[in-house]
Structures are given as structure tokens and as C-alpha cells.
Amino acid sequence: MQSLGTLEELPQQYRDELASMNLVPLWPSLRALLPPGVPSRHTRPTHWKYRALRPQLMKAGELTPMEKAERRVLVLANPGHGLENMKASPAIYLGMQLLLPGEWAPSHRHTPNAVRMVIEGSGATTTVDGEKCPMERGDLILTPTGLWHEHAHEGSDPVVWLDVLDLPLIYYAETSYATEGARQTPGAGRGDQAHTAGGVVPAPLFERRADKPYPMLRYPWSQVRQALITLAEDRPDLEAVQLNYINPESGKDAQNNLGFYALMLRAAQTLALPARSPSAVYHTIEGSCEISGAGLQAMQLAEADTCVVPGYTPIRIRNGTASAATFVFIADEAPLHRKLGVYEVRS
Ligand code: 1HN
Image (cartoon, rainbow, N blue to C red; front, side, top):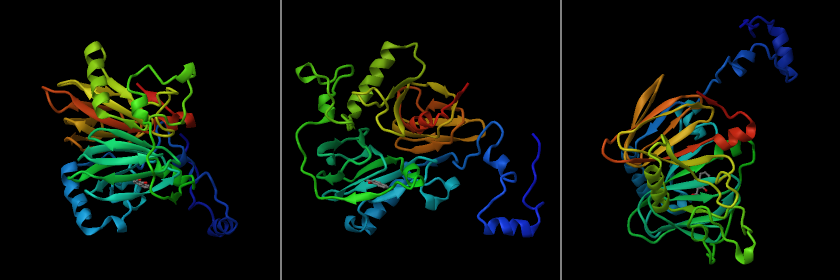
């Protein structure tokens, strides 16, 4: 590939004149903007250990009352993007949120899309769009763009969950804002009760009509886990025992920009995942695994650990136990890449 002229080759006076006119020569930057074959990525493979992170989160519980935090969160920031930018990847924000017994995180709504993956504790609820969702370990709860949401905790032990948002993307687009609201009064009817079985959706008086654009807000882990086990037993030939969290009415991704999946690694299984354009987050719901790949320092994920892997990176994911299945929650930027027309799988 031909090397192009540099900025330094241009007379200083010319460069100054251009800058004063808000003009920039393209050719000195062209190769950096369009590197050959593979994009440059700021996202660094990064591993957050729950065992190390948890005490710091509990300390935040002692140091900062809810009234001073609104949301008590430690952000999982990728150093490659600069910690202050609070990105796990170009489009993904990750945070660990703590809610203590008796606390309430007030109602608000905002343009970014959020999901919660519950890590520990029980007795908390998230009310989304007037629907009171119990939060149990492994449950995935959606807070799609524009829907009111608040968290309450009537249990006796701390509740911790992983927040996954498309905040960096929405912020980049200069479209990120929030509105404060009054406490919601939960109504009757829950999406997880209306959609308890795959393949059937409510059709009152024979009309199949979704009342809401997001008909399912809570995906109970007990059901998703069983679905994985049943699939694994039914299909011993299937290499990747993986489910995609979808909108049960449309069959499309559960949310607009990020994709969510549950992967079951069979006992002693190692799975090769091809290089794909989206960055991806891996979080062990149950069990442990090792994520490795060429040019990637192997990451040993204990239970409740979280890591991010940049796009265009082939990886191997190996079950950390020879005798039991490991269950992994995955979040990626695939829906966004598909919309942008840049989604790629490289074999
Ligand atoms: C948010 O609304 C929550 O509602 C958590 O629990 C984390 C991070 C950035 C922006 C909004 C929540 C958030 C957030």
C-alpha cells in the first residue's frame, strides 16, 4: 500500500491557514481512518473479577447513601477507551449496581436502552413501565428506551446486578438524556406471565395483537436455564448450545442495539467462536470458564466474573469444570452492526 504525505511535509503557514478556516487535509490521516483489512480498536480485552470488585461495591454502600447516588454503581470501564469515558466497548456500558435492603432507586426514564443481569441477593424488584419484575439470580430484565423504571428492595441481603446499556452509542449520537418521575403504581399483567412457553403468544379473541412494543421485560433464569438443558439433551450433535433473548412477539432481538444470549458449555467443552465484527461481553452466571485466543492473554472467569473482548477476535471458550455445565451470559453489538450494514463473521 502506497505511503501518503504527512502533515509535517506541509508548510506550517499553510497548515495554520487551513486550521483557521476549520479545514483539515485528509491524506495524512487516511490510512489511520481506513486501516488495511482490520479496524483499529480501542477496546482492550478486560476482565473484572467479581470477588475483587464486590468488597469495593459494598464499601460504596457504606460510603454513599442512596439519596446521594440515585443509582449506586461501580462502572466497569475499559482502560483502552479511557476510564473516564466509562465504556466497556464502543457501544456497551457495564456497571455493577448495589441495592441494600429497604432502599429505593427512584423512577426515571431515559433514551439509552438498559438490561440488568441479576448476580446475587433476592427480594428486590424493578418496576418497568408499571410492571413489577422480581429480581432473582440470573434473571434478565429489560429497561428499553423511554420506559419508566425504578428499583426497590424488600429482602434482607444486598442485591447486586450487572447493568448493560448502549449508553456510549446514545451519548455519541448526542441523544442521551433522562426525565425524573414519580413513583410508579404497578398494574396487573406481566410479560413473563403472558409468555411462559416458547412458540405461543397471547391471542385474545383470535387477534394476535401485542399491547406493547416490548411485551416481555423479564426473562426468568429458571426457564432460560431449563431451555438450555433441554436443548443440550435433545441435540447432542449441537456444538454451541446457545439461546438468543428475543422479543417473543416480533421474533427480533429483545432490544434495539445490543444482542443478548445465554450459552451453555457442556461439561469439559471447549467451543471455538469465530471472529465477528462486534465486541462482546461474557459473564458467567454459573460455573467458570477460560477465554483465550491468539494475541489474547487467557482470562479465567470465575462465577459472576465479567470480561469484554474486542471485535474481529476469534476466541476459544473452555468450561472450567470437567464435571458440570457452565452457563454464560453474552451481550454484543450485533444488532447495531446489522443495522449499520457492517456485521461480519470471519471463518
Ligand atoms: C440507569 O438508569 C440505571 O436505572 C443504572 O438502574 C445505570 C447508567 C447510566 C445511565 C443510566 C438504572 C445507569 C443508568
